[in-house]
Length: 485
Image 1 (cartoon, rainbow, N blue to C red):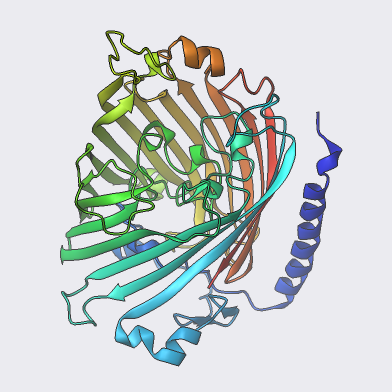
Image 2 (image 1 turned 180 degrees about the horizontal axis):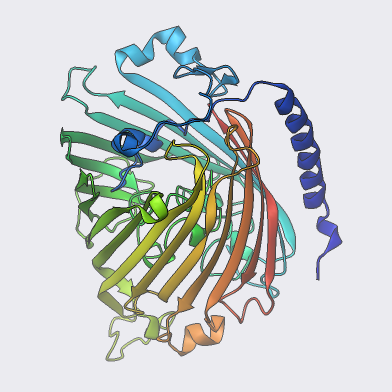
């Protein structure tokens, strides 16, 4: 039952509704604003099929819609694309010198009705509460060609930090997938306010069809990405299940050293990578133990589609992990001196795998621009089931640009997911958590208040997978406010 002690969350929602209504009235009287550009570093995220308007422009018919207002890289007729505008470049001429600065601050005010309903040890907590979490990212992008390096080369450095309540309500839901996933990143629950270097990535095109990359990189956005359900939780969905596939993400380091290649083709693309399995969030450039704990290898193929004469993509990939992972049959046990663990430590397994598939398909486009429209998305995955705690995963939904504010840049999403629990849990984790299949539904509407500010009401219904901790379903509700600078 909903607890009215947490009515302050609903008061925040009411305030935002009034703000949106006022902004809509102003927007109707003004000239239609241009589309909003994405955050600074997103085009340099390694994805096997970047959505490039230039790549498909030759196959499209001329648009009959009126042209959008002209804009520059840093200023539009609607206002600056970032909170700081062109301040850094005008003051230091940084862009011409090969340096670009940027970042964003994201605020999460989320409540939970239901969730964990019994005392639990930290960092878990009980449900029926409302929490605030903030997260900041700071990007420095180097154009290596302008700095005297190889042509088209780029180097991205990113720092991240969190503050407030770690995880927001994510550790109070009793679910496999955190319902406010960005609030648990970077994964350092005891270090509020501490910035960590999560990306130091060199990207080098060798030709129009071949790109290599190496360095330190966070795992988000690297693979199994959907147009309508991806990113890092600061511009689309916030539940991890609808951001990145939990079938492989639960066993991956958040950030570590990696190297690989991407090959783009007119029909799609393919690529592969190796990853150090040690989590390097708190490391800077400690390379002495590189791959000492094992190795992670993965690859993916993407194919462009044109069903119903509308663009889409299908992808299939696999990940193999060779590192020590906890054997679910003996998890939380310490059978000292036994056949399985003579040294008193829980037994481990060395190898695991995940095979996955996903697709996007536009159902409607507002213009001939390839990124203006909405459509379907879906993911599916199967794993070994031990050591991976999720045996299979399914998700599907609708998303894209909203017809209510598509020229301004509003987006929306409606998604469903099912996380199938492994059936190989041993007696101790079964007694503690009683893992079962978890599922959920998430709805969000991303209102682009200005080119640098968007406000996102979000609501979720969840069936927890840890049924001994959360004996009832949970409702998640709240706001995400994102500012780009």
